Amino acid sequence: MSTPVKNKKVKKAPTVEQKINRRNFVSFATFTILAGGAYEGWRWLYKSPEEASGGITAGARKPLRRALNKTELFFRRVFSDNHLVKTYPKSMAARNTRVNSDIGIEASKKFDPATWTLKVVKKGGEVLNVTIQEIMALPKTEIVYDFKCVEGWDQIQHWAGVTFIDFIKHFGLDEYTKMEYVGMETPDKQYYVGLDMPSAIHPQTLLAYEVNDKPIPLAHGAPLRLIIPVKYGIKNLKRIGTITFSNTRPRDYWAEAGYDYYSGL
Amino acid sequence: MRWCHWVNFPILTIMIWSGMLIYWANDEYTFTLFGHTFFRFFPDWFYNTLKVPHRLAEGMAFHFLFMWFFTLNGVLYILYTIISGEWRELVPQKKSFKEAWLVLLHDLHIRKMAPPQKKYNAAQRIAYTAIIVMGLGSVITGLAIYKPVQFYYFTWICGGYHSARIIHFILTLGYVFFFVIHIVQVLLAGWNNFRSVISGFEVIDTARKPAVQRIKKQ
Image (cartoon, rainbow over all chains, first blue to last red; front, side, top):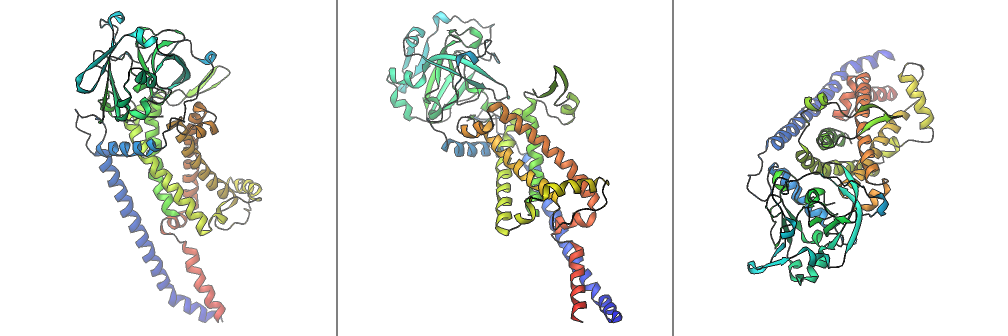
């Protein structure tokens, strides 16, 4: 019994072996080619050129910027005015509200809050000048929420001011909300942000003039700053000088440095 | 299934790397007990060797592109596992938790006999199912950090923004831990096992079965 089996095995074995070898070769070749392809793909992406500077966005690899913009379109669909930023009791707000940056409001620069007016640029270049007293006369909205920095830190802070949508309505700027973007810049034009309209007119977006029930200090952007809880800190412009409206993206300080233009939360 | 495995490897590597570029911007996690800080993630030499510092924007751009592939690959894997019925081989059974202990003892050479197994042993069932659950956890905690306002319910499930971030971080450490054990096990399992993960068949089975059948015929 055992001999024929042995013989057969000896005869058949090479073919099975060959089959195995062939399949192994094909698998490993495919694997090597795909791995090589993946590596080349990665090299292409990693070495892909950055966007040209001088545009609205800059500083990121071109394919990655395209991806950021596409991703923005996806996440804009889930944006809703009904999705409110979580708020906290006042007692939880930090006493020392963190100051992270002074770009556009450096202490060395001369600035007198008393002579400040907010300039809203309307169609045809007409400029609406608004004083801080006019803004403070509008209904005051307070918010205690978790301010989030793109770097990863966050802090519960207490701000007060007028919601941007109240401001818009009071000054009869309603028609501008049909436009797609709002641009804001510091008086010296050194810091600037671009905001999509839905985020700008979100019910928790404030033109703030108080922190912890006191007028905001210069380091926090006196006399008026933006508090936009649906965005990272980088969009929360201090010391608003001018406000513009447009259908194309206004320039944005950090979007020029490789960050996502949207930066929404 | 093995396709998903090999696709996942570079994606996860990129996610961990870009995650580190992001974490550097505010590296606040330390292990502190009774006021004594034992260590902080990560030492400067570690960052500098890997060229991590000052690349937050870049890290986010990579992270938010490859998150799509990571998620998609995970969804494909889970769908395939369910449709093909392979989940039966993979999901832990009641006895798995007891058996896994025996497998561990066996692998550590404390116990001689390993419990019987099919495709995966009890420890593998637990580990490979856990890693999928961890992947899901990374996606959910990731979304909870990424869009805490729009996906407030994910943030709520994760116990808030802070805890979502910590869980996200710990899961990543978990992957690194898994990877180390995984590599050691692969090395111990030997070449034939490794080859099967690439080619999709194990040589012992294909070589022996025909021979056995032939014996029966005679």
